[in-house]
Length: 211
Image (cartoon, rainbow, N blue to C red; front, side, top):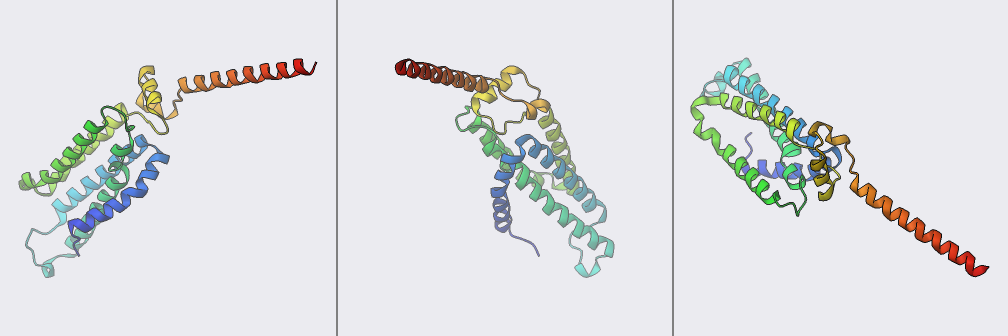
C-alpha cells in the first residue's frame, strides 16, 4: 500500500506536536545530533538496499525474487524511519531554537524552509543517479552532524539575554549543555540581598519603636 503525500504530511505533522515537548525537555543540540545520525544511517541503508537488491522498474510483482521482496521491505522500513527521525528531531527545532524577538529568527526559518523545499525537488533533477541519490543525502547529514557538534550550542531553558551571555563568554558548543548563566544569578542575588537589608532595617525600626 502506498500512502498519499497528504497522508504522509498529516502523519509527520501529528508526530511533530509531541516532538516539541521532547525537544524542550531533552535539548535542541542533542535532538539535532540524534536526528542527523539516525537519518544518515537510514539514508545509506536505504540507498544501498535499493541499488543492490531491488528489481528494475516495471518488473512484474509475480517475478520478484525473495531477495528482492526482502529488499523492498527493508527499503520501506528505513524510509519510514527516516521520515520519523526528521519529524521528531529536526523538523520542530527551528521553531523553538531561538526566541521570538531574536532578529535572525525569521531569516533562519525562511532559509530553512526554502532549503527543505529545494531538497524535496532535488531527486527529480538527479533521477539519472537512481537510488544512489541517497548517498548525497547521507553526505549532507554527516556534514550536518559535524556542523551541529562544532557550532550549535545548547539553548534549552535560556532566555535571550542568557544566550547573549553564552556567546560573549565564548562557551564551546560541546560544553554548552552544562553551562549556567551568571548575570541572572547575580541579579537575583542582588535582589535577595536588597530584600534582606530592607527586611533587617524594618525589623530594627520595629524594635526601636517598641523601646
